[in-house]
Length: 355
Image 1: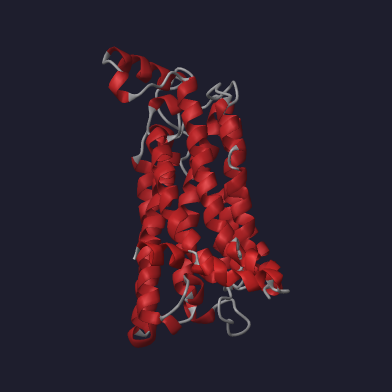
Image 2 (image 1 turned 135 degrees about the vertical axis):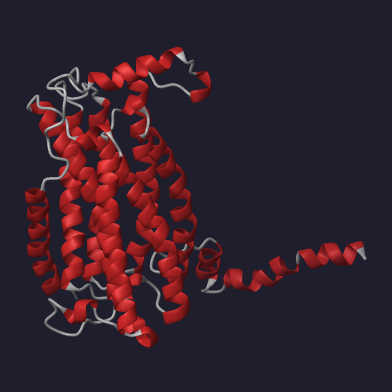
């Protein structure tokens, strides 16, 4: 019995003997070590299923650091970052329900759902951009800081109102035709010159996609300036800004995929990889910022350090006694309109170049 089993284990190798002399030998051995193709939808789906959840852990770590006094992050920017995480969490059931009930593969096939997702992401990035921008301007001009720099509530209320407006839009589109909700056009096709092709992004959705990208680069510029001597005097903020290079590439990948109506499978596989790398990079950047200011593991902190941390946070306010009350605005509506206008101009071009 043992002899039969042992010989049987070599049978596959014996069967390969004739093929070693055949013309298909190279193909046989190459297939044994075949690398999955980036154009394989199954491979792209497997990569996304593993790396998207994995990227949440570094992201939550960065969110924790943003709440620490040592990071000296404007409170409004921390609220925007929390909103960004909330948008990701909300998008998961949206995609799941759309797949199960409408039989679609992504939100791009239901434009009004894609619009809501884009609008929520824009709201979160715009809140971060606005908070950093207003804080940097106040510090450089030696003016009292906006209330959103020191407290969470002002920006939290504004972001909540924006999210509520997104939910109202979604509820209205669903009620327009509950039996065929996935076929409802965004605002009745407003801004579109023709019926959208499968996976094509509408003009209104493009606006907030591009406005979000504009805000993202303005945000990076403000983060860089936040590390200057007249702000936090922490050069690690500049390192943090540089570590957003993968996130910049992500924006290019998303735009390219949208221009090709979500048909480039390789980009679908590349996106989760870049998201994971970006989350790790920014976590390391935020850790470098807090370590520069003396942060330590909570278990190693003593109560005596609490007052020191409060003084350290107060130091970025330039003694915070400038005038005893806050005058700078939390939200610059002029900049918001300029960002949306820039998004509209780029949206006009993108809608013409979609293939």
